[in-house]
Amino acid sequence: MSHNTINRLYLIQVGSMPEYQIPIVCYLLQTHDGQNILIDSGLPQMIPEEGSDFENGQDVIEQLALIGLKPDDIHTVISTHYDLDHAGRHAAFTNARYIVQRTHHLDAATNPRFAATRPQWDQPIERIRLIDGDLELLPGLELIETSGHVPGHQSVLVRLPKSGTILLPIDAVPFAAGFTPDQQDDPNNPDAAATRASILKLLDRVQQERIELVIFGHDNEQWAGLKKLPHYYD
Ligand SMILES: [Zn+2]
Image 1 (cartoon, protein in one colour):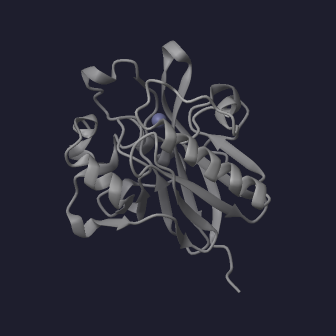
Image 2 (image 1 turned 180 degrees about the vertical axis):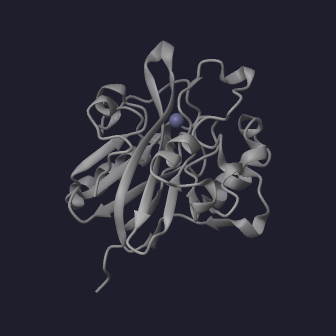
Image 3 (image 1 turned 180 degrees about the horizontal axis):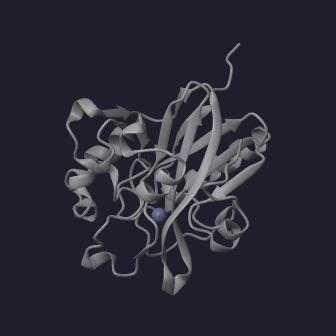
């Protein structure tokens, strides 16, 4: 019988989009055997012109220091996708192995949308684990392929000893209001069908099993009521 390995989930707010009151966030998981797994890394230190809607807060490295961690203590970076507000500090984690969907990594190589973060995510290939679809990375830690927002976007499901199962849809479902089967397609989204399929895939998980908490990717109202680093879910 497999034993869940994740002991803690930290929620980290590293910035915002002030105009829309949207939090920019990343997450840290800690395993029972002392591994530190970061999910995304937030905004870059210097925000490029195309990201002028974003504003930096206390960055991920400063916040990790608050709980006694240095960048080199991060063993794994789960990369949900390479947008500016999710992959902006990847290169700081020089001991880490990055985990990303193959389709996303290959798309990013030629997609100008991800050019600004390229110095962050374009690491030596031996440091990148390319995966294809859903994966149980560790007992109690699943990666769920949820394309639509971008090709090869991934969401994360984590099982904790006390808090139970927590789903992190990331940008597959940025706001609580969008987590419904009758979500209207956004006419500006070229991948609306994939976006909807991914929402349905995650809704299906919520129906199939007991999920205690869904933490939406950029939902300010929900975020205000959640525990943030140095506090954690265990
Ligand atoms: Zn985002």
